[in-house]
Amino acid sequence: EWSPDEGDDESNVYQSSALRKLFSKFVNAVGCAVVGLHDSSKLVPMLTQLGARHINYGVNEAHWETLGKAFTLTLREILRESFTQEVEAAWSMAYTFMSSIMIEGLRGAIAKRAAGPKQIPASALSAVPSEQMKSAVERSWEQVQTLGTYNVGEILYRHTFTIMPEAIHLFPQEVRLKYREWSPDEGNDESNAYESPALRKLFSKFVNAVGCAVVGLHDSSKLVPMLTELGARHINYGVNEAHWETLGKAFKSALREILRESFTQE
Picture 1 (tube, rainbow, N blue to C red):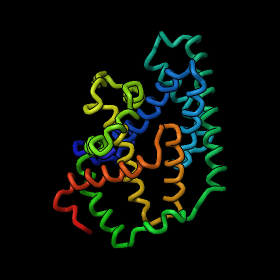
Picture 2 (picture 1 turned 90 degrees about the horizontal axis):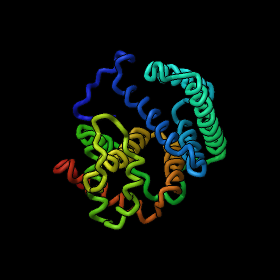
Picture 3 (picture 1 turned 90 degrees about the vertical axis):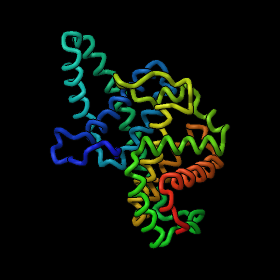
Picture 4 (picture 1 turned 45 degrees about the vertical axis):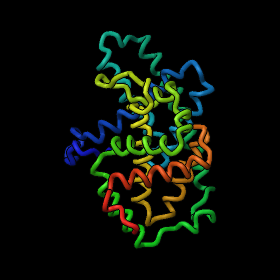
């Protein structure tokens, strides 16, 4: 995740800040799964979707087994004498349960992609950007990146709630807490949605998705399935089509605020 205070040196994979953040996403997913262990009606869809998303990451089923072994070693290192045979057996069963659901999600995504759209849908044909427009998007996105995803996410949700104040009801405190990445230095206060670390992180996911789309603008065969799957996932979030229009207006306002005079008519 790009941020202004993060170094660019990724030459040593064993001291990689990017990998630390990447694997922390797995840790956060485990945390969400642990919270949901007593409610499979919510846990199964979440893990299925999580597994499905890995279709874009080059993951295969064998990787889940490797990750499980690594996770066991990690727990043993952290818990030490508290990592008893009983605890190990319980975690082994829990991980097998979780990974099996994610693998099924991955299998379903593979099958769906094989049968899914590869071409630009008719509804989007009138909005295909020209090569000149693509270049303008790419150049301006380089400027946006210097601000950092979390900062852009905060600007974006502020504009979103200004344009559609009722959208804030999509993110009650209990929902925001699910998106909060727990860490020793992060506060627990989510009482004010307008100063929410969780919303900043949630909207930064949209910012990262835009970044991926910008990179893929010249290859619709990969971009269309990715965006189709991303849209499908929002069926569980209470999103309707009007929200996309609002988000588009908010995103334009956010770009105008960030780019200033560089946000030309072009």
